[in-house]
Length: 46
Image (cartoon, rainbow, N blue to C red; front, side):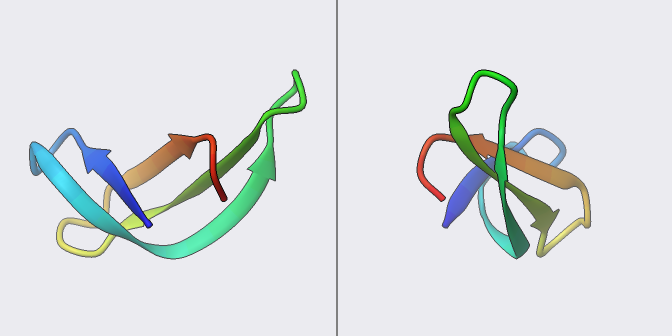
C-alpha cells in the first residue's frame, strides 16, 4: 500500500503497516516511509 510522504514529496510504500480505526469508524492505515523513516497515514483501505 502506498501513501504520500511529505518529506520525499512522492508516493512511497508503507513499511510496518498497521490497520487502525478512526473515532468516526472509518478504517485507516499508518506506518513509516521506507526511504526517510517519516510517519505515513492513509485513510480508507487497510
